[in-house]
Image (cartoon, rainbow, N blue to C red; front, side):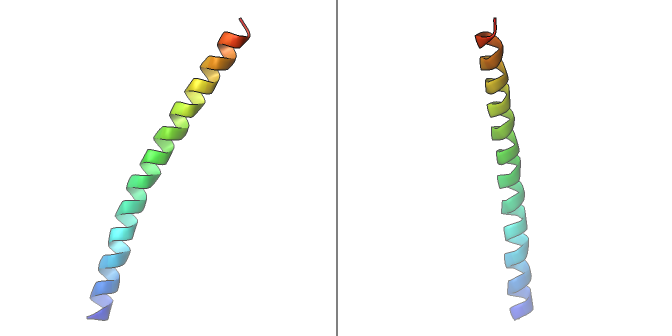
Length: 44
């Protein structure tokens, strides 16, 4: 019984971690694009 509960908790944590990682990658990608754009505008 304890193994089943532990397995479900680990599985839930893994899936929530994946969603968070995708969000983090998207946020860092957006920040990089904004930084590149700002530097380009400042050097024109």
